[in-house]
Structure formats: C-alpha cells, structure tokens
Figure (cartoon, rainbow, N blue to C red):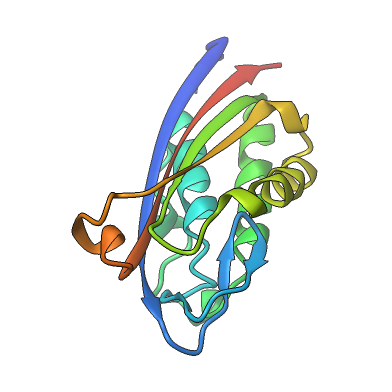
Length: 162
C-alpha cells in the first residue's frame, strides 16, 4: 500500500429485525422489542464503519474478513471485530481523521442513544469524540426500513497517514 496522506472509505450495512435478539448499535444496547438478525451481534453501525475502514485500506469487506460461515464469529461482539480492524489501520501507518455515519431506522428513535454510541466508538477507536458524527434518519414509511422491518447504516471514514 502506498503511503498516501489521506484515504477515504465508505461502508454500508442492513439487518432485518428479529425476535429474541438484543438491539445493539454503535456498541450500545438499545431498549426495544426486537433486535437485529445476524451471525454476529448484528451491530449494523459498527459493520458499516468496519467496511468503510477496510475500503479506505483497499482491503476486502467485513464478510470476507469475518465470514458468517465461521462459527468463531457466531454471536461475536462487533466491538471486538472493530478493534481487530483498527489494528489493521494502525499496522498500515494510518489513524482515523474522522467518521461520518447515518443510522436509518423508523423505530426506535436513535437520537437519545447517539451520545453513548459516540463515546463508546471514541473509546474503542482511541479518537476524539468530536471526530465522530452519527446522524439519525428515517425512511418516511418507505421500504423495509420505513415499514419497521430493518435498520440500515452507512459510514464514511477518512484515514490520515501518520
């Protein structure tokens, strides 16, 4: 990998709601009647951030690095997966400059949990909390998100060579 000063990556994830699962986003458990279905804890926000980091490094994606066919990732804590990816960022001589992200959910309301998510992510990634943006959006009743069947997230990261 060349030592470019800046690298940008984009990430996206979507998970459908499921019964008898915790709703985890940004490493935070959110009280809600359903959680998200997935092989791991289905933290769509962290998964989008992971894919953005991997994209910025010109690596593959979360499904290649942590395949859902591997039992060791069954119910995995996505915070731990994010730590592994952050190690790849640092090994290649980069640090996170900033993260901009969206949580797109019709329900539950995300705004009350965003400060906790930002605090958790800043701690895990060892970056300033002001380098993280998390915005809450809805789909105005449209598609699977708007019908309260799923939650989707996207993220953009900028890495800086150190």
